[in-house]
Image (cartoon, rainbow, N blue to C red; front, top):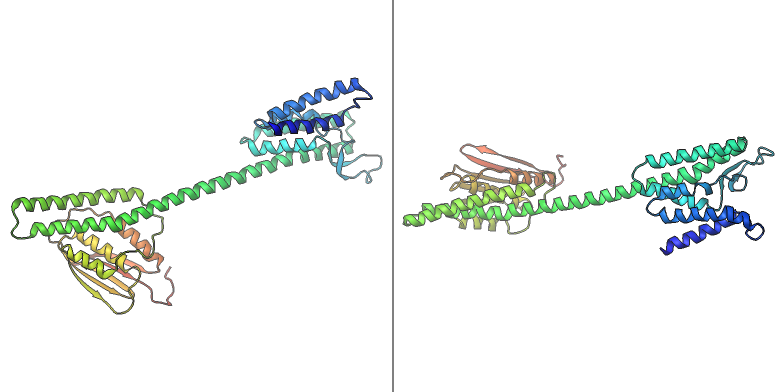
Length: 372
């Protein structure tokens, strides 16, 4: 409100400076300046929500008195006895420039402003024709309309587009961050919960085959194995909703190392042999071994598993299952692991081998070119 009052006061002073002398000719002042004050007040009142309406209201105060306006470039010396001015500016021109800028800044539709500018051009042509239509007036009128209406409007449109692009970029970045977080949660759920559920199913399957158990205990173990399989399937569905295929997976999962992972799986009842070669263990070894053991536990219950780890090659191979698998293949774990291997510059192969299944990851040696 204070801003609008100050704007009107300044505009009223400029309008009064353009009109007749209030002391020398008060009648003319009342007939000319007072109505202009009314237009200025109306323009200020509607200027914030409707800048185009304010621009139209200020139209009678626009740069039509070309011979009296201050010019950025005066070309009268080129044409003697012709008052040729480039971009003549009056006292009200800064306000017109401001509202023209606001039309481009705040108005989403373009055609109302174009229609108003066409109206302004028609009025300008009428003014030029009424004054004789000489070259000086044509040049002054065209540059005045362009400089005080069209150019500020285009700056406003440009500013609005830039702000929209920034907002869209910020929204897109936030959406990408949410998708990455969902993918991270999906990977953690698959790596931790999926593996643990598979080990629970393996333990339950071992109990079913253990001698000396009562029929009720064998039945309970079977129900536990089926419940673990159902939980694994529901987890797979949730991961499918959370996971984004294009999201990059981390290169090095955290947690226990390969021997601890194999020992925990063996304690759950899996038959595993580990061949840990000399040299440093690759950062991806744990992820590869975990994925291979999880798949073996879900899809080949009771099968013997061979794990081989060397500095540049990790292999997990299982034999035929001893009991019927209870989990369906989701493929999400291998998809995420394949992305990790690709980012590390390696290759992954997975498929049936004989009666079993083999997962092999080859990593480049130090100094080798990235195969990508």
